[in-house]
Image 1: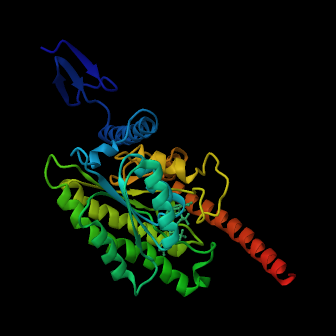
Image 2: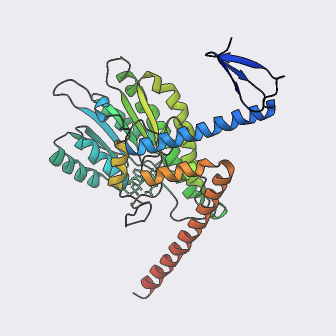
Image 3: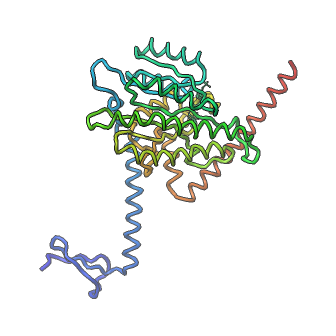
Amino acid sequence: MPADTIHLASTATTHPSFTVWGHEIVVDVPLPTLVFAAVGAAFVARYAWSWFRLVAELTVVPGISLKKFQTKTKGAVSWAAVTGCTAGIGLEFARQLAAKGFGVVLVGRRQAALDELAQEIEAKYKVPTKTVIADAADVAGRDAAIARVVAATRDIDLGVLINNVGASHEMPVAFADTDPAEIDAIIQTNISWTLQFTRAILPQLVARSADLDAPKSLVLNIGSLSGRIPSALLAAYSCTKGGLQTWNTAVAAEVEPVGVMFRMVFPAFVVSNMSKIRKPSLTVPTARDFVKSTLGSLGLQRGAQGRPYDATPYPSHALLDYVVGLFGGVSEQLGVSVILGMHKDIRARALRKKAREAKAAKSQ
Ligand SMILES: NC(=O)c1ccc[n+]([C@@H]2O[C@H](COP(=O)([O-])OP(=O)(O)OC[C@H]3O[C@@H](n4cnc5c(N)ncnc54)[C@H](OP(=O)(O)O)[C@@H]3O)[C@@H](O)[C@H]2O)c1
């Protein structure tokens, strides 16, 4: 005999009942109500869980240590390769990975800048460097450039690859007015180079991490929130970064089970030549702070909750990414509209600046 009776709603006697730990549970709410309540509870639980994870990952949950990707052999050095490393975010990845003891393969298009950075890193962090000249936008020279990087990394313990190099539009522009050559350069740099370069380097990273007790390998693909939130007036750029996200998820499913952590990183605006923003703010970090946040939260999704191989590491960017996904179509559409307005403003300012410069040049 049950110890007592719990009614989920009214006390009608004709409804099904069952017993849990000595309590009789009488289901006397109408079935549709019960189904709606269960679905509602599932939704609330999903959002509560993702919100809890977001807050925890931004405050107390630590990222995976970079040591996991370094050899434990005494006296030996593990290496990281960084593309587009002579300025901005790539430069900071090169510096901060060197500060953690990685030798760095510096890949860029200007030999003098690569040499200068190599000298700085070797003097400051006491780690070895190699430089490889490669122009990611150069279709004809692409295979030779990739072969040079493969040759430079063949005999070293390469454990980290930062696919950072990227190209965007000179300024926001309607797709119908975009210079076809600019579209080609963006696709070549962001998609063709990144995929072919990774295809050439990845087997080495997979082989390195095959054994259970071997150090793991890490690939970070630098995307953009422009790929996550379709960005009007930067349509070609937005398309390539969105494409990279899909590619990243597909490849991650292949290589993560065999020891290669393969993640897409989503910045919003960061102070750099590309963003043309010079002053940091709450929403626009310096490249240094952005990279610190990224390397300090490896393995966490932060703002990219619910997207397994994605990470939006910088706190204000993380909140933006999270909120855009929060109310489905409504917040996604709002995000697209807000970005269109913002890019219209940026274009108007860029055109005014161009006109001022043209006038100044004429008067000289
Ligand atoms: N900054 C942002 O607000 C922002 C936002 C979202 C995503 N991102 C992404 O973050 C990544 C880095 O951007 P960033 O802001 O650091 O840019 P950045 O300051 O302009 O630096 C770009 C770096 O890539 C190099 N580079 C550019 N084109 C190249 C080419 N064709 N071949 C070889 N190297 C090339 C540049 O070399 P030089 O020194 O020779 O110019 C420089 O080292 C990109 O993938 C970008 O899409 C940036």
